[in-house]
Length: 394
Ligand SMILES: *Cc1c(COP(=O)(O)O)cnc(C)c1O
Image 1 (cartoon, rainbow, N blue to C red):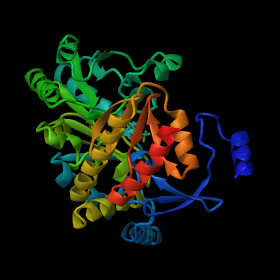
Image 2 (spheres, rainbow, N blue to C red):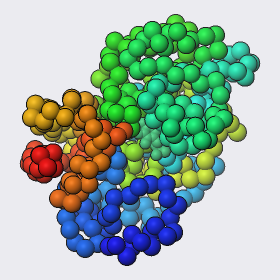
Image 3 (cartoon, rainbow, N blue to C red):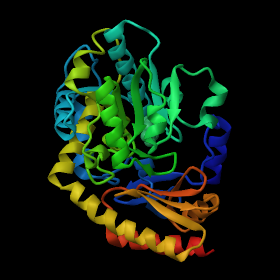
């Protein structure tokens, strides 16, 4: 394994401090490294592999699609894209879909749609967007511009401009930033990288009302918290508010690189039009076959019921750690998107867990993040808790 790691470090651009493991394959909720060691996976490729590894229905659908056709072009229609769009509309109650290759690209599209919507109203080109501190929306320039973490942005300034930052769950801080130029308010329904902070219902409802009043578009980033992870297909469905634009990715393709932004018919009819936006790969038949199959499996296997059941159990187990260890301050999160907030960096705990065959990841420096595949059972959670307890004790 060390030989491969050395070669990797000689060749790959060093943009990640990687853990010293080379994974080779997966089965269900387990990963295996190239020396055959088994790991229980509570990361799922960062909230991606919701169905676990090696789901037969999913794999077979992709294999069949590969034999038919992998790629055409968005200048032609293809059936997987049509089916995937239909199913996403049904799952979200939103009306128009644009497929991308990643989360960041979905954010780029959402920003463009919001700016165009405002431009069509007043013909001006100085519209503003309000984003949240501690948010994370991706690494491309537009997505970075709305990411509320200076550390990620600073070296790459100037950003796209006219972005202001408010605080999640502080409505007055949002209201104070609104001007005649505000075209959109963007936030994660549950902040992921920034520390597993769910938006509060009263906050989200107040922002929704403000947006309605001023015809500002509400963009909810569901890239990490969506696709069932928080117990409803999209986290905002818990709150009784609906975004004008939503972004999704990560769990959407369960491993095939895909994303999408969706919008209401009103935004769809009054924003991006032919020639305004495009992508070569986005929405290709292979990617869309993945989306279509994922949504099929969710429905047939009542995945959301399972997420809610194991999510409750995970919550209970994590609360026990908060009780037991003084350096753990609180548990935050919903369903299978949870964090244990510690009063010190958690890197060492995560490394120890990996040595003991448990894959975990941080969110920020002080938070242990739990975003497992949806197919985990209560027994898997017990196993995770046993290993984690040993690491915490050490
Ligand atoms: C991961 C993530 C992104 C970026 O997605 P990529 O596919 O890595 O570009 C954007 N927003 C949120 C909330 C995310 O968790």
